[in-house]
Each structure stands twice: as structure tokens, then as C-alpha cells.
Length: 127
Image (cartoon, rainbow, N blue to C red; front, side, top):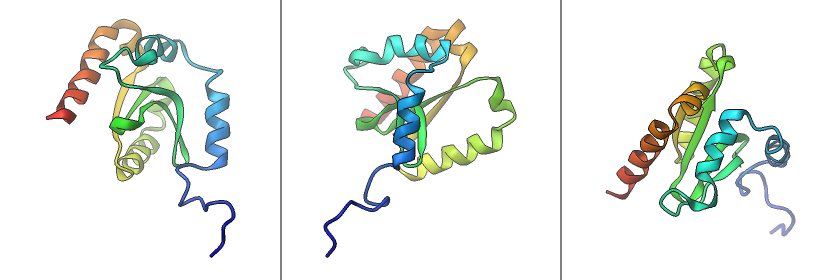
């Protein structure tokens, strides 16, 4: 039995994803900053969210690991990458995560509605 470093399948993420996550935390979009202001410090139902969190080989915008919930904010560039977003969502769901996607302008113009939707999903989990 080899007692060295765990393989990628034994780790939850890759070193590259951890590096990318660390770098991304310094480059949040205005919508990410606004939503993070509400999600941080367990302000929603005492749930701990992480920002720019690595999950497998991906870096997700926000994650509540204990609830297996991922929140992704999409800007205009996602209109061109819709196929990739669908594939990525399926990969995350395959790892047991629920994925919520919001447009940046939803966060900017309707933050209360975004928070209500997040709460609905979290409450449905508890039932």
C-alpha cells in the first residue's frame, strides 16, 4: 500500500482548481461582490457559504458544501458558452450538488428575489 499523496480521485479537487480559486477570489465581479455581502458570515439560515470554491476540477462562484448547493452568476459571456454551462451543471449535479444559476443583472437589480430563491431551495432540502 502506497502512503504518499492521495490521488486526484481521493482528493476533492485538483491543485490547479485550488490555484484558480485562490486567484479568482481577488477578481470578483460587481454582482459577485454584492451577493457575497449577503452570503458571507452565515447570514442566510446560519449556512456557511464559500466564494470561488473548487469543486472537482471546477471553480464555482459560491458553494455551501454542507448543503451541496452551488450558486453560479452568469454574465453576457455565458450566452456564447451555454453548452459548456449545461455540461458543467450536469458534472456538478453528478457529484451530488444542486446548481442555481442567476444572471448578474438579477443580482444587481433584484437581489431580494435572488435571496428568496436561494432560501426556497434550501428550505426544500429540509423537507
